[in-house]
Structures are given as C-alpha cells and as structure tokens.
View 1 (tube, rainbow, N blue to C red):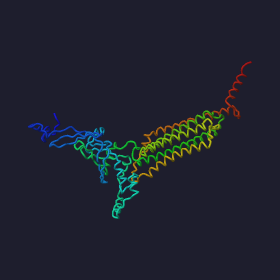
View 2: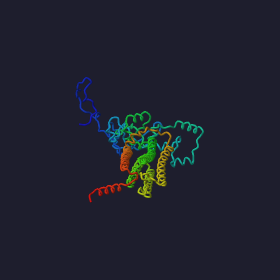
View 3: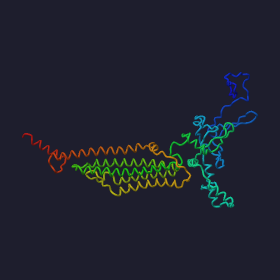
Length: 444
C-alpha cells in the first residue's frame, strides 16, 4: 500500500462510515517525509504532477537569513536545532523543518554591522582603507547619516548573542519542498518568548554566555578571593592570640614540643594554599570564558597560575617550616621578607584578575545586557562545600586542640601545687624522685 492523502477512510460528521465507491488516485498520493538533517548539502529532485520539479533536501548546512530590523540578508552556516514546537525528537536529531528554531553563525551579520557606515566599529582592512581615504558625502547625506546614528541601536538580547557568536533564527522555507533552509533572525517578542518558554535552549554553564553576563559573577568571585586571604590572615592572628593568652594565663610548666609546632604550621600553610588555589582556579576559568575562550588568554592565565604556585614553592624551599622560630607556646616568629613576598604575590595575582575583568568591561560595547547571576548556585556547583569543609575542619581541630591543651595545663598546675614545690621541674625529675623513694622504703 502506498501513502494516500485521501479522506475516504475517515467517518462523516454523523459517525457513519463513508462508502468506498472509488479507489486511490494519482493526485491523492503522498510521499515519504524528507527529514532534512544537518550536514553537507545533498538535494534530490523529484518529478511531480504537471511535469514540475520539487527539490528534496536530505542534508543542508546553511541558508539565507534575513535580519528584519536592519533590512539585510546574509548567507550563513546553520549550527544546530534548539527548539521545535511539534516534537522534541526533531531537536535531538537536528532535523530541519519549517518553523524550527535554530542557531546560526553570527559572523556574517557581525562583519556587516561593524562595516556599516552608521556603526563602524571593525578594524578590518576594508575599514582601515576607508579611514585612509574617506568617501566624501554631501551635506544632505551627512545629515541623514547623523540622524540615523541616533537610532542605531540593537536589541540587548541580540547583542549578547553576538558576543557568543550565535544567533537564534527561525526557518520559514520548506526544506523538503524547495530544497532550501531560509529564514529570519529572531528579535523582539519572538526572542523573549523563546527565552521564557525554552530554558533548555540557553547555555547551562554561565561562563559560556555573553561577556557581561558573567561580569557580576567574576566580581563576586574576586571579592571572595580577597575575602579568603583576609579570613585566613585574621584567623591565623586570632587563633594564635587566643592560644597564647590561654597559655600565659594558666602558666604552662612544660613547653610544647617543636615537632608538633612544625606539623601544625605545615597543616595551616597547606590548608591556606589549597583554599586560595581553588578560588584562583575558578576565577581564571571564568576569566577564560569571559574573553571568549581565547587561547592566548588561556596561556596567560596558566602561566600566571604556574608562576604563583612556583613562587610559593620557592618561598617554602628558601625558608622551610623546620627553620621557623617558635616560642614555648608555639608562637611563630615569621621573618618579614617571607610575609612580604606572600602578601605581594597574592595581591599581584588578584589585581591582575580584577584588572582583566574591568579591562574587558571597559572595551566591551555599552549595549550588552547585564544578566542576573545566580552566585549561590554557581558557587555550590563549583564546589564551595569543599572550601567550607576545609575552613570548618580547621576551626574544629583548633577547638579540640585548644580545649585539650588548656586541660593539660590546668592538670599540670594542680600537680605542681600538690607537691608543694614552687620551682619548675621536668617530668624526668618526677620519675627519678619516685624511684628514690621506692628504693629507700625497701628493707636492707
């Protein structure tokens, strides 16, 4: 049986079955759907009724798309299908049908816009040649040009798509009938409706969006990076001040072993650098996406991270924790050059990241939108719970250590008072005294 477009198989409005007084006819035939896919162009011609020819597109990779508000049409490449109102399977298989919402390459439209007389922004050879030999216009044409420049604005949503290099478009032709995938760029209410009704069509990773869409997040991340440095510094000062105060208040008779002080210092240095390196890594990934994943920026950020990490290793190698001077209460006498190098390296790296952020903001077009940034969800996705666990574990460990140390100090003080001796003595002297008493009590 062939595919038929007749309606004789359907019942009438009253529900009665239609009488089959004739069979299929040629003009009622139907053909298999084209199911045009995304790929190298492949078009078959089909002879139809009247000797006419239809063009069945089996594969297409581009088409002509009109930018209605600017009255320009460009041939561009089709990137993929993002939405179809009839069937999500057509989105998964990248099937090109009429009214399908697709993404096209924005390069032809961006180049045209940059070279347009009203909004000249490009730096190509054509623009430089025009700057060297400007075309003289009449006063009337110049006035018209100035008037049009006042209203030469682009939809902010479109501007954000230009930053990402992709534009949303709708197919208005029938690829299975005409062999072409032509359409128009989505603007205005259509684009707003698409973004409101199809959240899956937007990038899930925020750093894949337009440049200024990630700007608030980069600012917050930079704040948290500097905040991490301040928190760890204040934490270091406060905890050691509390420990020293407790130690002097209860007048510890026995100094803390130097090995424990070194272990404690190594632990704090490792925790601090892990926290700061994790924050800086997330920041640099955002900056890399902020600059449209430019390989030069990626190499620069990797070099910055490597230099910062190497500088930390050099500082530790020159002045290892085993050479740090500790007092009896594990107080640290850190050399000033080491502290200065650490602070300078951190501030320089953070300043470079902040400078790259504001440099991109300063040179970006003013019409780019500022999209809302879910800072909490992005931080949670990027592993903020790991950072929180590191900080909480440090505080828990300090609390346990402080309470246990204070209890030991109190017990040692009570032991000294019970023996009736006001002179400090070591644990070995206690053992020697007890052995002498035991020997003297034995019979001769």
